[in-house]
Image (cartoon, rainbow, N blue to C red; front, side, top):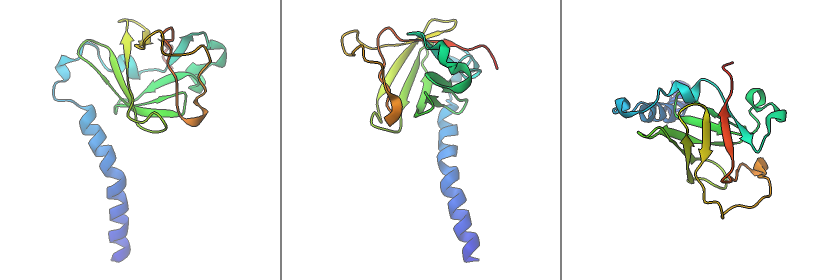
Length: 150
């Protein structure tokens, strides 16, 4: 009996965050969204400026966003967090793990197939970001384009 209660506690602890995330990902005011969320979740969004297409991010996930239906995202296979679309069609991401935990970034959506981080032009360097430690630096000229459907 004690083993069964212990197992139920483990399942509950693992299930609770997923239930909370699912509830948060299904807002009551979904009719206020400008775009169908599947625009963002149907395929990866790979970095095209600077051009990293030779790294095949659409397949490998390298230098690419992968947005899930549950409201989570992965960037570059290392940076994790949650995302939501605002009523204006832009996406706000919030990093949940790593040295940049809690940081929010606005991604401007052009309405078709491009996302651009909204960062000041004078706050970054020309040094390419190194996400090996689970962080990522956005630059004002970064662009992400939707991959072809898998």
